[in-house]
Length: 60
Image 1 (cartoon, rainbow, N blue to C red):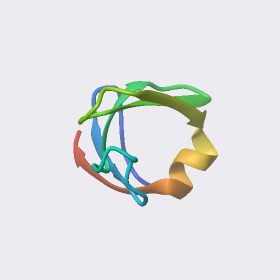
Image 2 (cartoon, rainbow, N blue to C red; image 1 turned 60 degrees about the horizontal axis):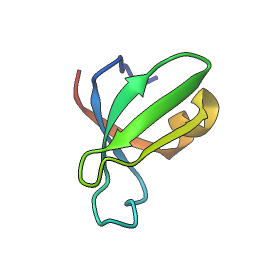
Image 3 (tube, rainbow, N blue to C red; image 1 turned 120 degrees about the horizontal axis):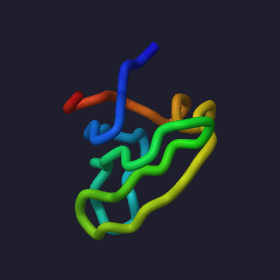
Image 4 (cartoon, rainbow, N blue to C red; image 1 turned 180 degrees about the vertical axis):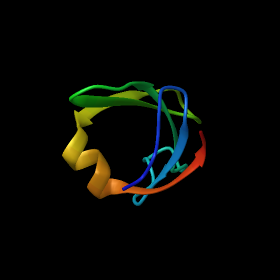
């Protein structure tokens, strides 16, 4: 299982429509909230869905 925490930079499998696939974790709990590093848009998704869509963790 991947290790990540608040403030970690992650790469998702699919890129955001703005062109990047780098995100910053801004909330951790039952749901995970991530913010796009390029445009600043934030999305929230359940932890199970996040784990499926996660490619790798860059920064811990």
